[in-house]
Length: 276
View (tube, rainbow, N blue to C red):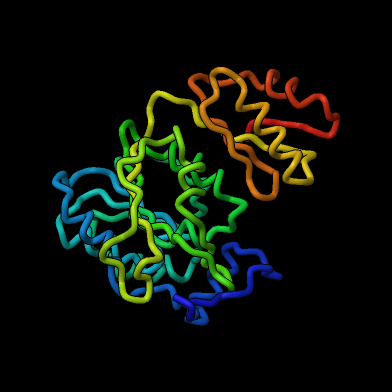
């Protein structure tokens, strides 16, 4: 994995559609395994219902989708933000009606899926977007839907990929999902051995998962104070704020009135909160 390099962490250019298009055009895709990841392949082999709606975000060359088609699955959607990649995929799967190829921003995508497969999408996103990721996954999943795949359990000197830890993931996804599995992957490819976590999360249908935009925080101490105040609300189960302090994710038994949240942080006139 140490050979995977796209740019240093302090990228001068944003990690957006143009960035990923440039990576594919330059063929700087060292993260591409060239095959379906073994832990995901093993998981797919356990699935019995071939008609479930499946989404693969940040699909890349879609080896997982190709394997799903080989196994007879009939309702697969893949989405990526890089135009040339999507054009190639549309040509590759042109005669197969069981797969839908989507060019677009995952965070603007609408739909309902029984299963979402995570494979090097989470780690490609700047860490500032992790609260938004958890929120969007919860909203895209159908009742009792499953989010599954691989997450890195390590850090990197150059990024992307952006790493993380099991403790971080537990705090991020807590209460929005039921943790069916979150453990060290047993059959990772050799370069990623002992650095991947295999997870299987089930959507918690009984909670509200809402993302808010936040203004005014400039330090981690202030962030901790605000999140603690929100967490003290009796209906709130989990609160986490993005690393740039711009978004806060609240998981609760019922939706908290926006005015109540604003009143709680009104001790500082700079603090403003609104629903995303």
